Amino acid sequence: MSSTLRAYSVHLFTATGAVLAMLAILEAAKADWDAMFFWLLMAFIVDGIDGPLARRFDVVDNAKRIDGVLLDMIIDYLTYVFIPAFALFQSGLLTGWTGWFTTLIITFASSLYFADTRMKTADKSFSGFPSCWNMVVLVLFAIEPHFWTITVVCVVLAITMFLPIKFIHPVRTKRWRMVSFPVTVLWIVFAVMATLEPFDMPGQFDYIKWGIMLTSIYMLTAGFMQMLIPVSHSARTS
Image (cartoon, rainbow, N blue to C red):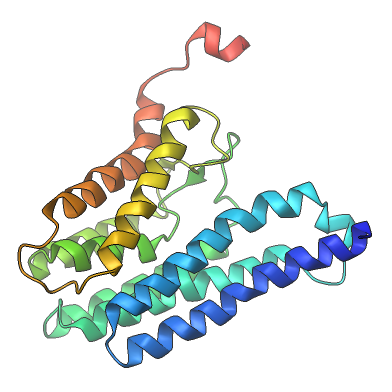
């Protein structure tokens, strides 16, 4: 297979995320949240794989006709922001004006963040919360907190998109990667397990909910902790 064909194959693989997004929103329209999150998780996995493949096969030089970054951004906005926000509004977890307010804040702030040229830091982390609302909303569906808690969490995360707070990339951020990557894999495992059973079943799989919460807390706070803990001299020179 030629280098050009391999590179365009990566773009085709990335584009399957749009198909997964459509499958997810069709399930959301039927309020089948388990199926919706399953397809969003599949899109999340595709998004995690296509980046390394794009760098491996040098799509920038070998498949110039398609802008892989733009393609990725379009699909990410659908699967990371738009569909999760729609699900949060339709689910009934938020009541009255809080549903409208929170959904509009998520979509408005995220559109600006996706266009922010400073979203990446020097160590391949994110500057500000990286609009991973697919992960946040899945956790909210799993634990079903009070609607005021949901509103506050979403507003705070939306604000942190534009603050100089670091959030790690589980693969590209080298520091603590030996911990961050396994934690991310665990989060995916717990998330898939959560989608295999109805979210509204009372008292089910408490260990899965705790697993999702604890891994989410690490992924949300690891970057900030790295800002507080200086890099040792030995790590800096290794």
